[in-house]
Image (cartoon, rainbow, N blue to C red; front, side):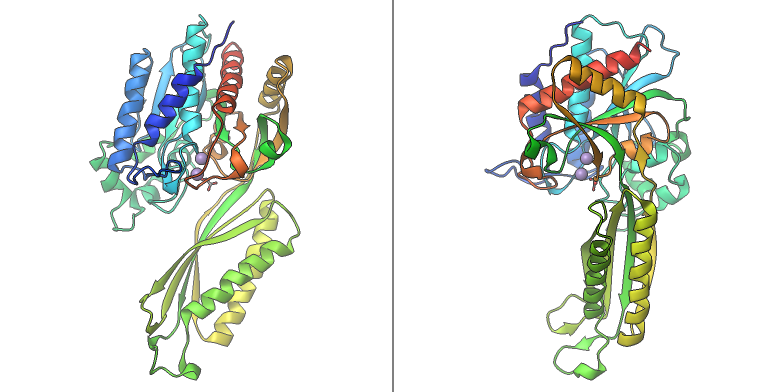
Amino acid sequence: MQIQIDQTRLQSELQKLAMFTSVEPASDGTAVTRVVFSADDLRARAWLKELAVTEGFEVRDDAVGNVFIRWHGVEPSLPAVATGSHIDAIPHAGMYDGTVGVLGGLEAMRSLKRSGLRPRRSIELVMFTSEEPTRFGIGCLGSRLMSGTLDPVRADALQDKDEAPLSVVRTAAGFAGPLSSVRLLPDHYHAWIELHIEQGPLLEREGIPIGIVTGIAAPAGYRFSITGFGGHAGALLMPDRKDALCAAAELILSVEKHALATGAIDTVATIGTCDVHPGAVNSVPSRVVLQLDIRDTDPGRREAVMQAVRADCDELRQRRKVTITEELVNADAPAQSSPHTVKLLEEICTQHGIAYKKMVSRAYHDSLFMARLAPIAMIFIPCRNGVSHRPDEFAAPADIALGTRVLAEGLAKLASE
Ligand code: GLV
Ligand code: MN
Ligand code: MN
């Protein structure tokens, strides 16, 4: 079997996909903003489906807008082998996060078709809805529903910043039907592999073109609402204030302190948003909402950090006379890759003399939830300076093509099992 990746075509498709953005492409790289179910997301989806149909693959989508692109195998009743990722992009993102796994997955399937392969099992490409939490506040919406990790009623009630619920937004985007129908059975897929940029610096730093992911760190999300007593910035005397933003500042530093205190490189915690009410320079803040993103390979250690933060919240409540409420958005378990698939990918690399490194993913991916449905693995490729979630995110065309090649061979081998 001779697998040839069409690097030129794949590159031009990545460029084309980057043009579906609500932010003007920047001159020094492409800033992409493609929020789920925005006009750009819908146009991008239509374009992707057209590519798949042209290739003769079968296309369907589910009630939350996950897209399935299937190449039927010789024994179509067997559980399929699947790959995929996402095309939604956070505000001012780059053009490779997720898209490499979707367009690379498509090219992997096309390359196998060109090689003359007739796969025993069907091979399916999945494009997930809303891997990014931008619009509805929770990441991996599509794969959570697919794996039964998110309650469909809770999902439909999630609101965007304009208070539009998912139920309304998805229907307007053309995805109707009960969300309960999105769930797949655990034996639906025989195996799952996701191709993705590393989003960290290790592969590039070590000059290694392929990462084979052995596990994905466990993410959790919390929302803290702090309410104090605000008022006129000139007239409200310092001793009489219960400044919610000052309390929030202490809470932010508490998170940093306790995450650092574990001494573990795998503990990371970020407060990435801070909404201040009323948000006027001459008004003492009366209410602040913070969103915390905390991750660890060890969920017990992650919880220990949260307990230490909660103790600090108790002390803050007493001392600053503010109320602090904590709301859980998600607290997920880590995922382990399938030893069988990892070994298979290692063998492919060894056979072709491709240097590789086994590594953990600290970013989350839809594979975290696909692990509840199938044996998984991920293939990482280097990205320049480890940069991601920024317009200057970059992956070299040759690295993308190599990752796609390893993916193609992995899919072919798994489809023959
Ligand atoms: C995914 O985008 C993540 O935040 O890890
Ligand atoms: Mn991302
Ligand atoms: Mn991603």
